[in-house]
Length: 138
Image (tube, rainbow, N blue to C red; front, side, top):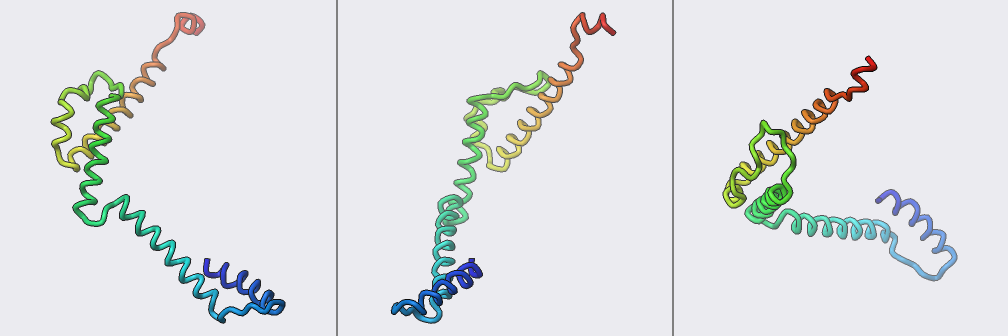
């Protein structure tokens, strides 16, 4: 950004300066870059405060709420798991939400792994199933 402003806008200013009575200070392009960077930095900091919170405690609460929302969504729309895995609703949702954030993250990771394994097993079962016609043709 600094190179773009300092090169192109400076050239445009100098071209204008020769044909116009308007005069700006010599370091206006440097000031423009400073203000633009300050604006973008302020926007970024406000975004981070909104997403991550101002303090470590607020950040942890936001993270905990996010993980609890994921667990609630899994309970509301449970994935199809292979019969070898326990049912998601084996334990009540209320019991899960009382666990620590780390425990819930591990539980979500385990469920995602079980979904992947279940999908893999299901695709293997489909490959093993043949119709009578395909059996007779071989």
